[in-house]
Image 1 (cartoon, one colour):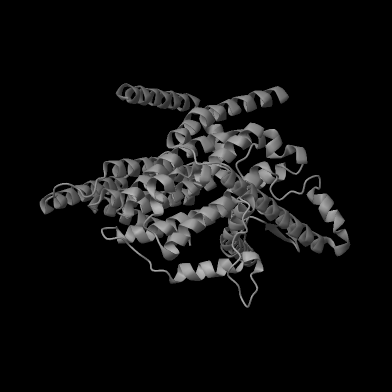
Image 2 (tube, rainbow over the protein chains, first blue to last red):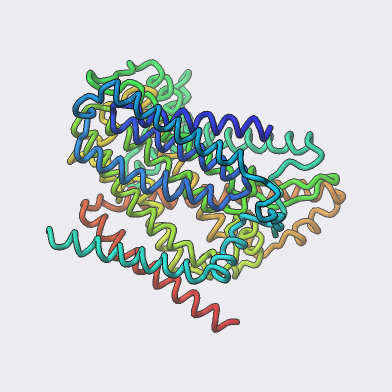
Length: 165
Length: 369
């Protein structure tokens, strides 16, 4: 059952990703990206990371992609301007495949005995309480730095927008 | 606290039967009871408030049933109407949009508990379809998906009014989702959990209901919820006087009905979330689970649990109905806000107040401890 779901999510994620790149309509591309994010959220949930799965839906699929769609609709982008030559598409496909092949071969070469031993996941792994506790104890400094960075970005965005009004 | 109660138990059959029964119950409650009947309730209520008689013409052999026959005639009319797709519209997306609008309202119900936990003949029955650890966040995540239904509808119709409506939906939903999440942080702090069943259990004592512990949070949340529902004080995405009917201008027949249904089902979901977070969920005021089970003690241990369960489920739906009624009252009482007023309310009033609420809650919790 788990394996079946994994293949289902994986297949649809790949399908949506390829469709997103190939689609000529910006809105269609954005929608396919949302489908892709859905599938990724499903995969996260299967890895017991329920919080990340829901946040993926809430933040990326629910908020950021609405903004992307919003911009596309506001600019009223209908179809992609110009045509990509078949040559270029083929080149891109070959390049991506070569990169994938390289990564897979590197992973296959790795000696599993030399990797750091994997820790068994504790009870409640991926739940809100556990993730929150880790964020506010072991990773408090990166967490705070990230939040200050985001705050700076928000303030910067407000200032940039203000000067134009 | 960390048990994965929503994972299949070793004994699969009772689990599957229970889950299927709960899904069928919630689905039929929403699609069979609320979706058609709320139209009737709204008509009659608005008529009452505006000193009119309301729907009373359609009849079966002379029986009008207080206008209830109109529900059936409406359904027939919408089913037989021409399904029109404007020229130049994106056919696939035009078809897809109403479905994306309806589905989230139903899916969100999966994590809302409509009853407590009961021990029936050795089988633990939990009156919630999926008792997720992330609980209420799941509702938000799903609700944020429903935005796409309206946005895509606006875009796919190839109509400028629709497009404007769609863009307004996008802006409004995004603004209020941020504020809505923050208004509930106080609730999470007080109850120490996102799981809606935990929050429900914590509200067994009447004075521990969310409305008493988070009064400011309640008012902020209900405002945001109204805005997310896109109904009258906040219905700028479909403002008739400005942009015809907004994002569903180009929809007719059953697809139009689906947008209308989505609005009603969202209202049910919002009321259910309100009840689960602020009004004690399935709990009867001043009567605890154990007291209720004692009261029905003469039925025997298991049947007493069944009776308790029935009372709790009925109390939950009663509270939900009450809140639907209040939400409708608000709809018929307030005029539509202007676009800039909606945005100002969201970003400049509710968002800062929500942050203040979090701060005050933290201070009080420190002081109490």
